Image (cartoon, rainbow, N blue to C red; front, side, top):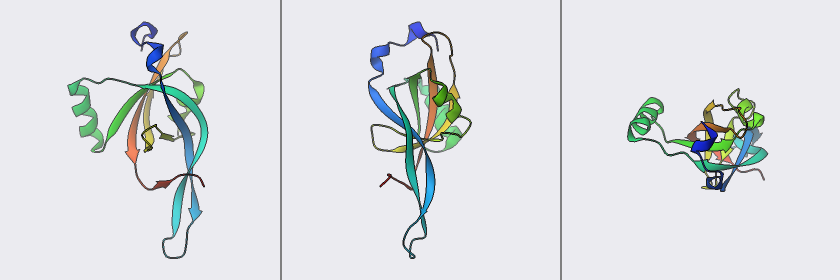
Length: 123
């Protein structure tokens, strides 16, 4: 994404990138997945066209959300499953599906996310 196309003041929400780890629960429920935060960045929502929304939702058959973050190598590594989960300000957890990188000066990365279930906050 070209830097002159996105206004930095739109990056007003906090996203927490992290991983999950499996921990034992009680004997009746087995194991649970716990979110382990690694770092935070500011993000803004990315507006999609109707055609893009239909294409993404049809492809993944689940709730898909696209956000924009200032270029950060830690976010780019999330596409390689080093950092694979994100918690947004809505309290939901998302799987990183893809990262479109713009590593130019003042560049922005577009992060495609898919909502996941079954993750507990770190205690």
